[in-house]
Image 1: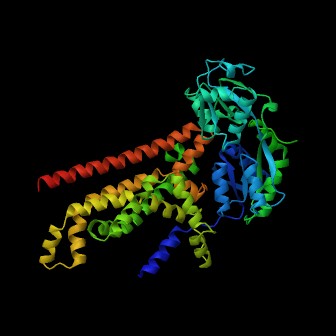
Image 2 (image 1 turned 180 degrees about the vertical axis):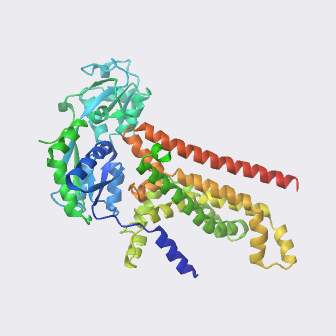
Image 3 (image 1 turned 135 degrees about the horizontal axis):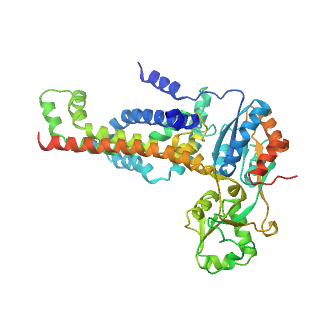
Length: 256
Length: 232
């Protein structure tokens, strides 16, 4: 067997199987993965179509979509990247909408630590607070806005009492393991359960007036070979009462 | 029992990981053997550069390597465009892309033990074989290869274990597509993201035990081989 032919065989062995027709490939920001996993069977029941879910960080998924990733729909954790994709022609014009609005929560794994007014943020006993990195995580930016509005951001920074997590899930882990006293996380994380057990502790929801709204936008991608199916999924996600109920139960708000 | 222990998706991810590791090791042994032989015996200056390039995956953050591969192999990259013009699908977001990424990422784990093994064979045995009339290929096949078998076991097992545990490269170049490019390590990431720690631990423990057993085999083999050397 010639070398060329053996390479051809190797390539045939390794090449991917084309996706089946009734599958929609959804790229989702990791913070919405759990909710989408609950939405997928409901959508399949309603439409007969299956969602193939790929999770990652919004930045990583954006880079992959720019490099021709075979996704039909992108559900981002922010609104910036979907807007960029739309202006770059990689998202279908007019398909972008806010599928979920995040709510910021200050949380401690221990009950009685976070008070109903968030006064703990002014306490000197607060050793370490975990937030997601404001540079790349919308919830981190919101946390920074709240701390700035309360005029404690500079103080926390001066004392090196802020731990920058990679994302809100890591911020949650820092507080859940007791390595940080409190963390700014998403209300959707509080609504979740760990291995079926509800998350306890104590929490405070800062008023929305202290931070700009955390819009999570999604859109249909131009490269999609299944645009009609992708658009029907997005219509369902936006308007179906069952879908909206699931999104709200997961701790998000939706634009009425 | 296994079916009860793991979900269908996790089983699929484990299977993809094992398949990826087996194919990666097979390709690496084929590719790295001549390369390591050349590095061990060649005298050219280019050797140093190639040696450094081979070791780069040890230093580069996996997501960086993955990002470069994504640019290179994607439909807009040079390799991806070439494949498209030949009527083939680009390698990114396919199992083939995972194999290419894994080969590069685990290359130093095979090349370095093999290079060491070839160097420790030395030139004397090969010169003796040459004076006995063995042609170069025969000298390589029946003298160098058997003497370097420890390097093959070490390199093969290290690459296998390293591929099982690989995360950043496969996430970037594969895109976390269940049933196609989602490996066990990425399935663990998914479980942790949705706070399903029980499933994450089941998979992690499986990888841990598998890799620990493999490494035990390497060290046991190496010790046995060393004894052989001491008492011929």
